[in-house]
Length: 285
Image 1 (cartoon, rainbow, N blue to C red):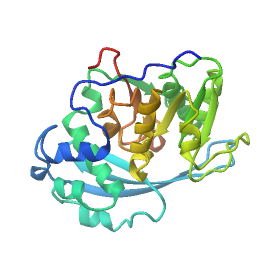
Image 2 (cartoon, rainbow, N blue to C red):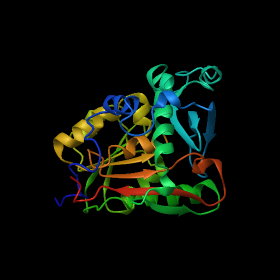
Image 3 (spheres, rainbow, N blue to C red):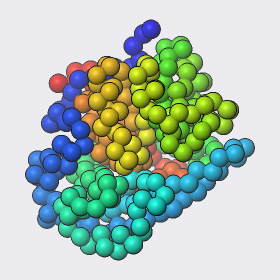
């Protein structure tokens, strides 16, 4: 079967193997200003539920968000994983404290905010800005998922692991002639009755390409996905609201392409909003 997209080796900047190395690099001041000199202006929590027209699934998502100057960082988490009261304690804290301490989703949100403040997506020269149209959630979700699958050069019949199931994205993969291999902790079937496994190793070991949500950064599975894709030489595409700037740091170091959607996320607006698509370049070294 033809190779799907390109699984690049590296890109400019430090070669990162996992997120702990990224935390360490930021805390050491290797990627920008010393985070001890920065303040988390605010930290807040959002609980959001939505059901698309004609669907039987209600998506329930919780996000913790951290603001650093002109940038927001965010990370989704499982219900009950974080007490919203932690936001009162985190607001106004030195950023290095949040990077070192607390629940992992809060640390990822702080890391995301730091990296987004150093290089906002809107200013990144290698980012392709995609306008999501105004309209109801169904229209916006369809446009978003088409933009994500557009990052793959799919061969007919390619098996695409989807880690973090969103039904419109399952449909978008099929429309491109590929076979979705859905994996999710919270869903047992897709909207069309496809079985959904909760064991990501089942799909990581057989997929020709992997699409993973940024929420894998918050639950700690991202590093495993990254390592396995490197070992097998298969492309990894990340669609990220959670940790979009964090995932960007691995572009060319295992991440082949990225759909980055910084806060405020598309589901919180009916107006046109932007997402940013990145591709690792073949010449990265």
